[in-house]
Image (cartoon, rainbow, N blue to C red; front, side, top):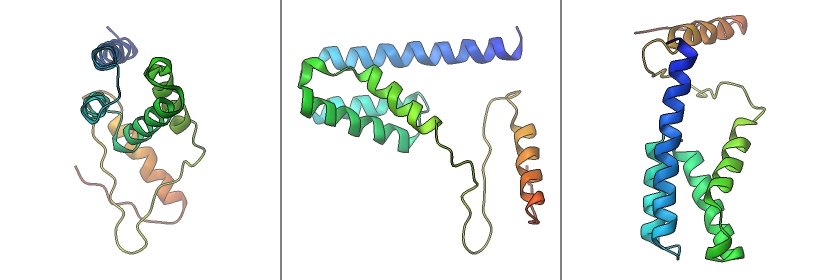
Length: 136
């Protein structure tokens, strides 16, 4: 099994688990309650969507529920739209700390390109006449 096959299999597993959890949460309660939103938030965070993206999805679901009512809310399309918005961001710059070191943590499974990405990031910093410091 090649790298991309492993990546695809992992993403499909995460997608299936998230889809199952969202369906369970949404069909279990016809009303949008605090408990339902907490469960949805936990499922999204469990799928490694991150806190900012999860909060945007939760806020969009709340807005849709308030404007359409419970029957017209499609959590999957709302989540897809919010994720597409965040991935389509044109801001590719590194968020720098005004004073002191800017720390970037690269975390991931073995063989997913952490070292290569770190090297590319360090090279990008060097091309801007700045000094990268790497630590393992």
